[in-house]
Image 1: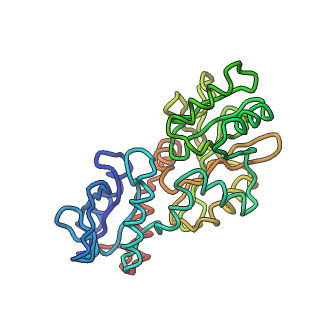
Image 2: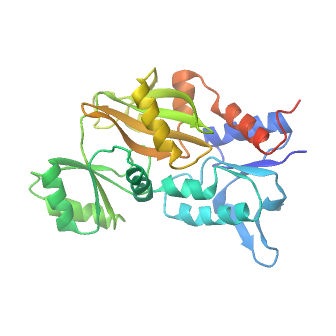
Image 3: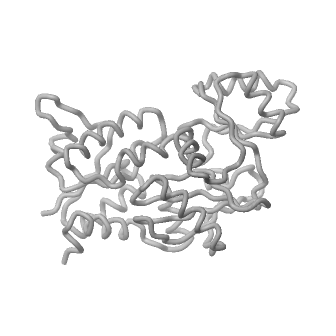
Length: 297
């Protein structure tokens, strides 16, 4: 029996979808939650319950935890250990690490020449205040977050500007990620790739009552056929990370398309709700082929 585990969240829709698909294809099901994995130096392996993860044929990483946090970097180190000892891991832990937090993702994108909204990172409150005044309005983003959780919009003419920035910093954001607030034309795009090959694009459409388009704040998914320039920009962006599956967040601006971020863990629900694309099936098929087993009867 082929044994491939899924690193995910029990009860999470996308994690369960991949685990169910693997069970259908291989007869084996294992959903690994990283907060329950232990390392034993004496036994030289990682364990999830009684399962020695090195006994598996591979791991598919979907979620490293229910919410993004710095703990995920330590959990990736554990997955790196397994990978370096020869266990196939999809996507590679080192590739995920480059896009897991906004600082690393942004530096990688900018080093690759990818256009992004003007962005400043600083630990200094007064530097941050000067940045907001220069930008006019800015979005302060935690380094580890998704669906706009913890983000704040701050204006340069705010009478309590420094106090608001200090409050944001004291909420655990020692490094402040500050991005100029740009006009979003009612939507932004998720451009998905598998093994570097373009799959499809979906749009996150605003409900008109929130500054962002996330579904957590009333946005909805819609099918989208973007211009070729959007696809090619996203293709170049994801090539910098070498992920097995990725979704590139793109915004169409008056100055051309720009990238917000590259995600190694998102995009499933958008592709399903907007395009009825079964990404879980595509990923499982790709992984089975990659480890040499091919599609099973």
